[in-house]
Amino acid sequence: MNVRKILGDVLQLIHKFNVGILHDFLSLIKAMGTIETTGRYTPKYLADESLLLGEDLSQRARETPEQHLEILRDMRNGKLKLNFNTQTSSVP
Image (cartoon, rainbow, N blue to C red):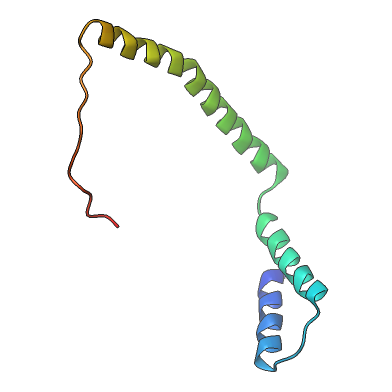
């Protein structure tokens, strides 16, 4: 059963026939739609994604100090080169 579709149909009927709706009922419909949408994400999926994100952040945290040291070394040795792109992008 697709709860989101059913709730969407109910809202369309309410709007079509100009039926008054209680605020609490509208909140319930929104909450049920949200639950249905987020219900696709199982706890295992969320845990796996969180673990991957944590590993990525951890790796970046380890690499960042070394990258900063490399930049400082290049600056000290006069080898740092900066390139600036002054062209504007045509992408909105």
